[in-house]
Image (cartoon, rainbow, N blue to C red; front, top):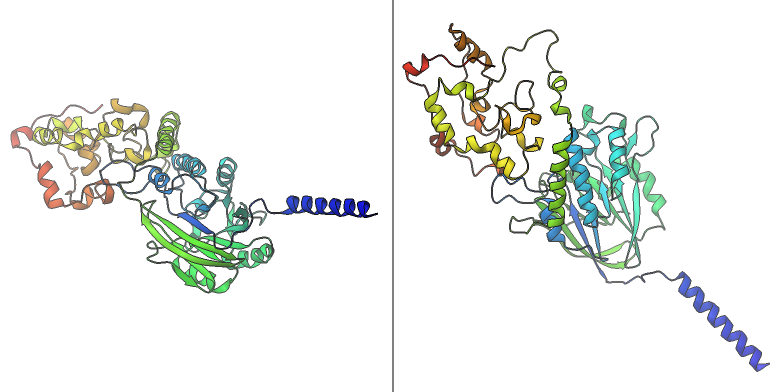
Length: 469
């Protein structure tokens, strides 16, 4: 009898132990265990600094080095606006940024304002190929009313279940909202979603592409939100904010700054802030070679891809049908015979080597770079990518600053009166390209003497220029 009882007891213990092993969390909850949230926002297509000038900050290449290898005690997210624009080459670049985020172990990508300017079809394509889940609880299909992306994602860290939710403030989009899309108010979408997460998540992190006031209002309205990360802000957070039960941190500035928030798990919906800051992505941070390889792959793809900007029909679509445009580009060589002194100065300047600088960086086919290194790119008569270095419109030429000279050259070649003249050039013309990080600090008074030129002697002006082709 005693033996039977002992066998029964042993069997019950074994069954209980087996059930416990089966049902216990893979990673037991660890109160007090630190968690680091790593945030990017407003990457704006900055996979790699363009290299126009030394000292450029940021780039996903440097963020990769700064973040280091992915860790089980980290959550990595992007709050939106990683896309730089709606053009086909900008969408291609965004796909490489998505790949970079995938290599860096990102957990979610929120949809921002620039992404919402794409069409529903284009967004579905980006979603289908993204290695990282794209989120938006309030960007919906206009025809069906259904969310275009996952509204949220639940992940596990140290045994705690963490819900990542994405929203976008649609104010300001207006007519620029992409075809086939509609935006639901953030509070309406969250009011419907958050009750569904009750009991399913120990913590809720909101990724919100919204301004400072909207981030604060969301915290006041929804006590369920433990952390709010954004956003559509004027500048990165100067300090970690606490509103209602939410910790708020935001960053911006084209991948030149990242947010880092460290918290301690205590209990469900109870986080202890340990440290919150925005860190500058210095030019002293080394660029990760694996992410730099993606930038190279992007430039190789863009070189062999036929783009809309390469199509003459696209470049002429804003012209009046049947009406000949008044002026066109002639090319720098059309100017040199009548302006030899200016030509000598130009040949000694960096302007005459502008296109070569792109070739050296393998960026000579990248539309993001070409416009400031050629003449008339993106117009019907200016530089075309298919011509490459053989084009008469490479480098920063006369017409880059003075405007199209085709009609002027035509009249001079005919020997008749020249009634087409160029307006005076000032500092504003230079600053179309010489601004911010694309130039050393611009000062017209000190820059102009390096390329100073003006009227030619009368004898030279009477010379007949070559006929334009």
